[in-house]
Image (cartoon, rainbow, N blue to C red):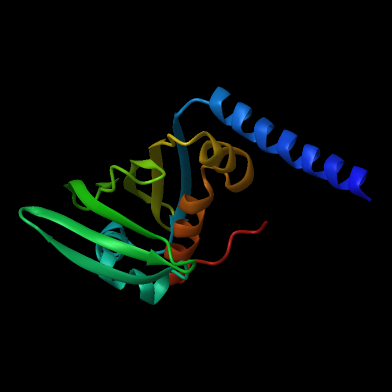
Length: 172
């Protein structure tokens, strides 16, 4: 029994070391993108995207949004289903075509920004999110790359935005 316990501990330790080693070998920075055509004109889709205070009403991952008072900057904190919070700010806006939102937590487990582009398309508006991110912690880097995927949060946002605008679901 004791021998199996030691073997089990050794396997867990080896797996943890492998995760760290692979995470260290991965680049800290990444670029990923996701797109979706959403029903509605660019102006209507833009109005939904920029109204971050209403995200909890249509995005199932966001449970609360709190605007923050930062002079001259549009800054807020989003709280997610699991209790995690992330602070964001709008760093660029060119209505209704381009919006840049940046993570405003310099000490968080990840850093980066989303560039959201809206273009007229057949059937509505083509929304493309390009994420330029950085994951300093090698364990989180491993999880972001191999477990969650860099596109997962963008795709969930786009799916929720599409549902909000009555866009039919995408066939899997």
